[in-house]
Amino acid sequence: MRTAVITGGGGGLGRALAQGLQARGWFTALLDLPGGFDGLQDGPHCSLHPCDITDPAQVRACVADLRAARATIDLAVYNAGVTLIAPFAGMDPAAHRRAFEVNYWGAVTLASELLPDLRRARGTHLAITSVAGFAPLKHRTAYAASKHAMTGFFTSLRAEEAPHGVRVTLAAPSFVATNPGARYGADGIGRPGAARDGIDAMSPDQAAQAILKGVDRGRDFIPVGRVAALSWWLNRLAPGLYARMMVRSVARETP
Image (cartoon, rainbow, N blue to C red; front, side, top):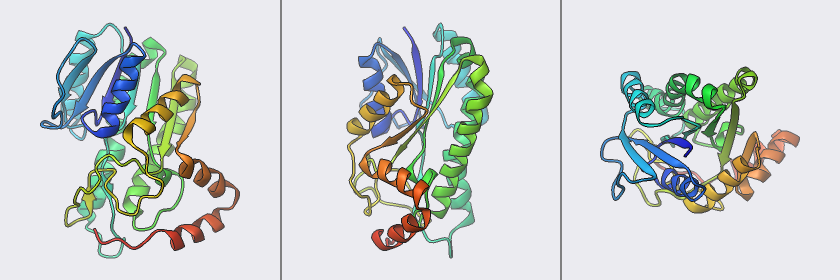
């Protein structure tokens, strides 16, 4: 049985991805912060691993446990993340760094640990980025920067890992309503999927279905949802027009 490691595994999209993979015959190892697995249990097709991905020592120990328990690690899903909705003027620098610690460095740290495992398995890195990872988005300067960094890292890693038979796939959802109504901290940090200005929101199950369908088809880049697909093409063909439309269409939001 192939093994997938999923960060943010206790959240809505993480759980939906795990269910979709289990239905395909995979074993899923879910990583999340302690207390993040409400209602989930270890089982024949799933194991739960409390782990702060911003702590390299915890990531290293978690990967060692997975290696001891599983014959192979075939897929790494970098799904954990936070959002940060605030204008850059007056933004707390610590919040800006926190967005990078989770969204970018958390993924990079795990990728570094799993690099030899995925090479042995000729497996796949699956990075869950965002429309904000390739296009501008109002009041998301820090969030967009962290997702742009993630996109740059994994698209560059693709060329390095191809000779080892390893695939690197990026999935860019527009808005997945994983935490509707959730509140943000005073610094603008919040759980993903709670923004009130989301357009054409998808459920976690819909997003997971689209992502796994793209993975099954061997796609390198998967725009998730109609808005994501339209944004991708419009931003490539007419970036100035896209920026003007974004400014007009995204309402101001108070974190």
